[in-house]
Amino acid sequence: METPPPTTPRTEPTDADVEAFKQQLGRPPRGLRAIAHRCPCGSPDVVETAPRLPDGTPFPTLYYLTCPRANSAIGTLEANGVMKEMTERLGTDPGLAAAYRAAHEDYIGRRDEIEELKGFPSAGGMPDRVKCLHVLVAHALAAGPGVNPLGDEALAMLPEWWRKGSCVAPDRQTTDQPAQGEAR
Image (cartoon, rainbow, N blue to C red; front, side, top):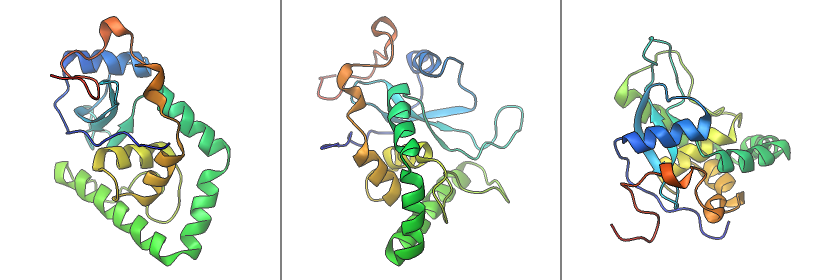
């Protein structure tokens, strides 16, 4: 994509955000802590989840991509072998490997600030391989550019999924957050 979506502030979820999540994933959120990133259309596209679900089950995926359009586009990248190519590059490019390890440390650090999950891995295959581009893109959107190099790369390969409008039904779209470029 020519211009990736801008970084947005982390916000507390509203009732409208919870409704948007339900529409996006077809189920209520579990362990929802915050909206970590908003799509330029104004709807949540990345949520921050608790390291443990309400029943105590560890859930190491801190950032969860919720937009079905973004998820579909990432699925296409995965099907086209992007993860394998990225993993191979980690073995031949020491600078990339170091930056990816730093992304792993950032992810674990953010999760541990909430609750430490001893013995649980990072997410998305970090730090040694690429196992899930959805997680890497979610981390890149939540943390901002320059934190997760492979998340940034995957994000740059995506189409502008928001150009067709919100993936959330207009009458239920988040109304307390303006779309990108709208006034408050």
